[in-house]
Image 1 (spheres, helix red, strand yellow):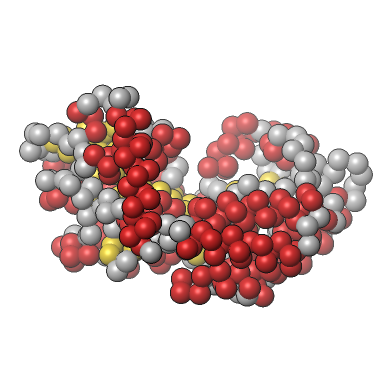
Image 2 (spheres, one colour):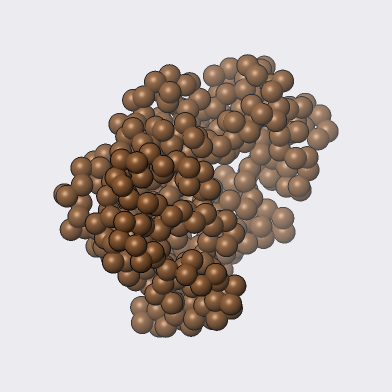
Length: 410
């Protein structure tokens, strides 16, 4: 079965190489021939200036190539198919399984003890889980993100939750009261296209994915309870099913006083709706059986064909250092994966950021399997059938399990 999947992936990769190869700048997809130069692919342009300190300390030149997220997947497929990639590359947590199965990364297992900043104990456990594939360690956590609840403190105070709702029952109670304010007033914005959100609801109801159980995972009660909770907000008018206002406008005018998002939203709200200062806050995820959120972010990996393994590992060791990670947070506000970095006052004394730190201690990784993104998109389609077309939940989940069986059998 795995051979069939690999064969399919190689066909896709070869196709991507033929299509994209003509667009390549030739040498840009291969490592430098200079022994004291390494090439690094990232999706964050700010890295180019950031690594100058490392270049000064190490004497190694770092050639940074920033790739937009929209192009990154195809770029990596081309690199794998051609065997010409960088020395070091950033990989999003949800892409690990797909590219690891294709043999993209150097197994770092034997190097863990050689570099102090590679110690798995340095990082959030759920982040480390997403660096593992098939008994290999394919990456070192770089930055992390997760989801929490954003809420209007003034409006939630009016319905009895000045410090934010603690449980999903609190959320439903508050959202019901807020939606009753009148036409076009809602209690909360519920994600409809975020592939991770339905899994978070299932985790919070005790659901766990076991790789050996396949589609039967989605017969477990906790999964259905998560789907039912998602549907309840739309069925009872607490959340808007149609597109409606732009989120910041709805948060600003109070018509949607709660929503879920990641850490980047803090700066965006401060910049785009500064008049809300002092009227909003963040809270860890509401609790059912637990309040687990998702772990996201990115890892540093070493391309399997590099001839500069030592230089690549030294660079990653520098990037994983707590002081470097605090400096990176200062640069682009991406949250450190290294837990020691969170002791820095810049993070520890910021109430909103420290809430993300608290949430990161209750996080889970999505299943690290190549089929995850396809399965997750199929679930989004299933939820749309339930929420928009009034599909029976039991029948819709039965069909979803059939689709999952088909996906896993390819």
